[in-house]
Length: 405
Ligand SMILES: Cc1ncc(COP(=O)(O)O)c(C=O)c1O
Image 1 (tube, rainbow, N blue to C red):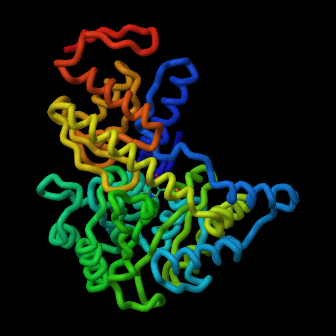
Image 2 (cartoon, rainbow, N blue to C red; image 1 turned 30 degrees about the vertical axis):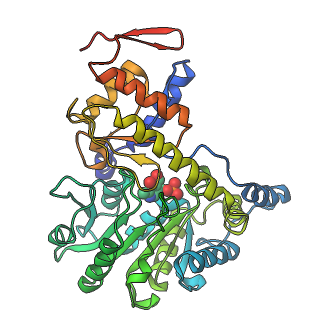
Image 3 (cartoon, protein in one colour; image 1 turned 120 degrees about the horizontal axis):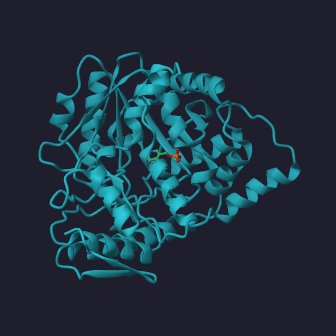
């Protein structure tokens, strides 16, 4: 078939594909442990459900302005004031179908063909493909020292006259690291000096551990809203465990937000109306669920680290936020795709190959599931890889024998 260049070159989302594989295996009754997921297990806040069912019960569910209902914009404005200390206007806000769409329409609004978009590695799987969808060229920057955050010098060395934008995601998917305030301040300064867009993907901004405070990028700029090329992305997906509602947003200068609204209006129109009301309910309602989730994740992170400590040969940086870790399994197998397939086949544990995030030898291991699953998943991985573990393992009543080492 004569498919387009884009259809032939864009890769399928590895994480979404793995979700499908895990679901299929579970349907067949396989004892799968899913450590590849990207969503909290908790339920959406009751205020979100009430607001959503409220509009559904009227039966009056119609198109809305394509950049979002006024009530949602108002809630986002309040959120921005409370968590970023920034007063913004409705013209500075657009609601989209998830942070993913907010980033995609933003890229469409700022990237011309062959423009470069720079981001640190490891990076969220979708950035390179989204940049390509917008006609741009993704440029991933790896830290020379193998850490999960390049230096400012390394970032600047990757930028040139073709650089149109930088994307930063902290806390980071897949590594769980938080970039330091100094790094973010340096990137704000660098992007302003070079007149480059800076996209702050703050999807996990509220989910940080060990008493840390989320880093607020606005603290590092004196530019006024309308002349600033800083755009902040957020969503209800992770912090309120509302991934399926598909509501995210962008806050930025009116000119770029308006351009995004025009593009979104031609793409999908507004996000789904009941979902917008659900997001209003979540943002305006009782906020205790975020802290409950944060505490659960921090506890899971601690459990995960305890188990990794007893795992010889695996190097893992302590996640500081989000719900991902990015251990280095290179001592066992360099090819992360093969390793991930091996673990799924042998011990039915789903992980995501580090290659998808721009770093070989690593696996992304999520800890957003139940603590029991995290524990069992890592223990199964250790059993599969560590030659000093016992020769057999029971998955329910199924006896596995290690015959591959
Ligand atoms: C870094 C990052 N940005 C954006 C998104 C997309 O969020 P949403 O589900 O709201 O589209 C994700 C989802 O995994 C993510 O990890």
